Structures are given as structure tokens and as C-alpha cells.
Length: 524
Image (cartoon, rainbow, N blue to C red; front, side):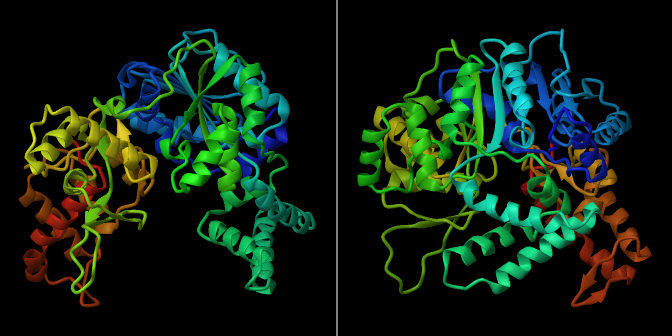
């Protein structure tokens, strides 16, 4: 998202090269309330809340939320008049009435209305001057109440020490060019040249290759605003914590639970960490040292808000769990310690205990749906022949869920899914997602993730407004294929024959509907 600065040239840089405005799943009120609930903070109901985003760009993060939560109110602030105007046009185009985007400077903007339940500031803090950074945290205190949750992301040391050297080299090289697009092109060329020239077996070459891998698939706006802007000032977590305290804010946690827990380290490392970092802030800082962390998504609340720091199995009893897993078939002739599952990240999980296997089997079967922990308890108990009200089962399932969340295998939610995996007689894609597909070519799904369906699925999604039955969908898409409006191929050859298209369309529509459901675009 675009950084909001006091200087006019900062806003102009985002007018000239707008930052692509996307949804960020870690910033939704639903998700923030779920994480906060683990620590005993009961956030305001996301269906009826007030949300402020500092640095909203053109509203790519806020607009889908406003569409999904019509009884909530959303305000976005950004210094780029071009991006705010683009967002305002989208608001008017779709007809949203519960959101406003304001072109303003964070330092001078004032709000005299009701306090906000959630404040989001993603991709802004590290890219603005000190005075604006101070004001961001002041607003997080001034415009909130005891149950509010604030989210601020920022670049961190020690990881950014290495990335910073690449940024400085790009700055040095790009200062010889005045056109911003040329500066971007030359920065990419410089990095490519450095990678090709660096030794293959050294830490320096590895650093350059990692940075090239990060940037090669990112658009020009990311490279420009991440590496070529005047301001990009990372800091250590303990320094951010000091600033939180000065603003009378309290560290709540990170937007991702696995970022807070020392998973992946040996017992010896964990014991040493507990000894040298007995308090929370020091513990988090040493985790950054161990992981060479480059980026944080920190949650905050009022300093006087009571929190519960001990997360135990019972803490997730009323939660729902989602994990993108598949059960692996047994490998013929291979010795295995137990059944294995593969996560979307590529991580493989081997389980030995029947109860653990039962939990993962349910999650894999129901993915991407968020399964209530109570359902996991009941099915796991049945799988091992115990009563579902057996305290052992509830404790063990809760422990497995927490371990999965700590290792980034599962996400925890407190609210029911807003999508359906069932294919209705008259399928319906979420209305705002349809509008985005028609006007942007991509959509925000019901987990607030950007998805870009291929042509057939996109064309089908635009037709799925809940009024058309399967036969009409097949006929309409078939006509588009025959006319050439929609291109389909079979064995490398374009399909045009009406008979062949009619024969293949039912199967194609079925697959496409299943894919739309798996991408969490269908609603009941």
C-alpha cells in the first residue's frame, strides 16, 4: 500500500507510479479478532464494526471488506490523490455506501467521530519520516478504545541489514537517471548483473540471488516503492516496542501465530531462549535474531487492556481450523513412520498417533473449509473409539490444532466461513468478486485473498449470479466458445465445432464450478 508522507513529492511518487492496491488477508477484522481472542481480547463483531486504514491506496484492501460487511463502516486515508480518485470511482461504480476514502496527510488529518474498532496500517510505517511514524502510533491510541485492535506492518532488523545493502546499490545506480521507469529498469538490470558476476558459493552471491528471486515476479511499483523511495527505515523490534509504550499501546502479538512461537528449533535452543529472554519483548527480539527476520505484522491494543498470555489447548475450543492439506498415498516399498500429509507450502507432515491422523484427515477432507474444533474432537474420538466428551480427546485435539497453527500448517478462525463448497442448482459467485472480475480481471475471495481465475472460470463466474441453472450456464458458455468470444482448446487445437463444444461443455462447467468453489468464490 502507498506510504503516506507529509512532503508533497512523496504523494506525487504514488500518483506517478501507483502501488498496486490488493487485499491483505492478515488485516481483516475477522482474522484480527480471531488472533486477539487467543490472548483474551474480545474484539468487536466484524459484522458491525468501524475500521480505519492508514495508507489505503485505491482501496484494494478496504472495498471487499465494505462489500462483505454492509453493516460495518470503513474509512481509508491516503496522500495520493490519483489513487484515492481511483478508489472513489470503484466505490461509486459498485454502489458502496459504507466506505469513504479521504485524500489527506496523516500528520494533519483529524477525526472527530466515533472511535474505531480496528486500525490497519500495512506497508506504510517503514516508508515515512519519523514524525509520521510517531503520528501513526498516536492515532492508534487516540482513535480507539479498550477493545480495539491495531495492525501495523514494518521492515525489521537484523534481516534488513542485508536487504538494505541491495537497496543502497540500486539507489546509487539509479541516481544517474531522471525518469522513474528508467530507474526501475536500470535497477533490475543492475541486480541481474550483480547476480551473474557474484561467486556461486558465497554468502554474498546467495544474498543477491535471494533478492533477485523476490523481485523478479514483483511488479515495478513494488520495486520502486520498496527500494527507490527516499524513506525506507527498518528498525529492531525492541525499538518498535519502545515506541508502542511511549504511545500508551501494548504489544498484543503478531498477525500470524506461528511468527510468535519458537517452532523449528531444538530443545536446547528453546531452553536457552527461555533463559536469556524471560519477558515477552526480549523473547520476540531474540526470535528475530534467530530467524533473521525482515518484516513484522504487529498487533497492538491499549496499554491497560488485560491479556491472557498462556495459550493452552482449551483456548481454541470455540475456534475453527482450516488447513490446505492432502493425504499422501502410501509409497510402494518405502518404509514410513506413519501416514503423511502434504501442506500447500510443500511441507510434509508424518503422523504416528491415530488421533493426530484423524484430525489431519478431517482437515484434508474438508479443505479449504474451516472445521469447528468441536467437530474435530467428535470425529477424532470416534476414530479411536472414545467418547467425544472424554477430556483427554479435547485436550489432545486442542494441542494438535495449536501445534499445526504454530508451524504454519493451519489457520484459526472464530467466525463461520462466508463461502460454500456446495454447488447449488443456481450457483452464485460473491457479487463484489463478480464486479472485480468484470472490471479488474481478478477478484478477492471470501478469505480476502486475491485470485485470478483462468478465462473459462472467469467467464463462468461472471454468469453465476444465482439466477442461472447449469443447463443455461453450459449453453451460454458454449455459444461464447463457438463465436470465438471465449477460446478453448483440445489437443492444441481451438474448439469451434458446435457439436463438440456441446459435448464437452458439461464436463468443463463442472470442473470450473469445482475450481471456483475451491478458490472460495461461491456463496450460498
